[in-house]
Image (cartoon, rainbow, N blue to C red; front, top):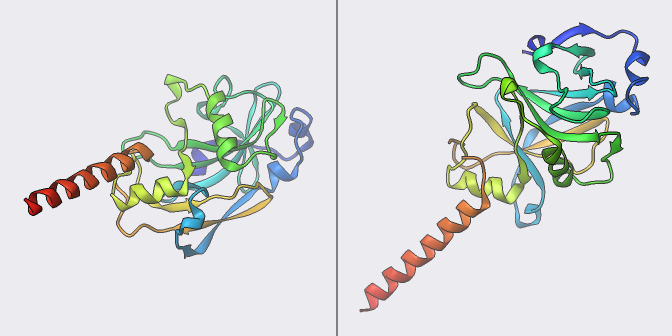
Length: 230
C-alpha cells in the first residue's frame, strides 16, 4: 500500500535535514509498534488519548520542509508522490505522524494525519497528545482535490469506549481495533489495543450522543416507574 504514496528514495539524508530544523531521530527512526496484548478500559483511563485503527493500516512519519517539499519516512525516507504532497494543506517546516489505509469506495489509499511533533517551525513535544492533535487540526486546510488526505480522529478514550458500547462509530473504512495512544512522542512508541465488547460500526465519536442516550434512558426509566406506581 505504501508504494502508492512513495516516489523517489532519499539516500543522502542531509539533503532533507538542511531544509527542516528537526532532529534526525524524529524523521528517519520514528516507528510505531502495536502491542499484541489488549488493555481493559477503566475509570483511570478516562482522559487517555485514543484513536481508531483501520484494518491493514501502516504508520508513517511525514516531513514538510521549509520549501514545501513532502517526504515520507516508513522503512526508508522517500519523496511523496504529487497526489500526497502536503503543500498548502499544512504549514511548511513541520513533522507529522499519520496512518495510511484503504477506504471502501476510494480510488487511492487515504493519508490520515493524527499527530505532529513540529508545526510551522515550532516544536510541539511539550504538549500532550490531545493538545497536539488540536493544534494540528486548526492548522489543517483540507483541499477538495485531495480528499484522500484528511485528519484522523483522536480523542479521549472514554468517548470512544462509550460509542463502542452503543455500536455507534461511523467510518468509511474497515476497523481493526481502537488504540490507546501515548502522550509523549519518542523514537519507538508502543500503542495498546482497546477492544470493544461489540463490533465497531457506523458515526464519528461524539460525547453529546452518549449524553443524550443516557438522558433518554433515565427519562424512560422514570416514566416507567411513575406508570407502575400509579
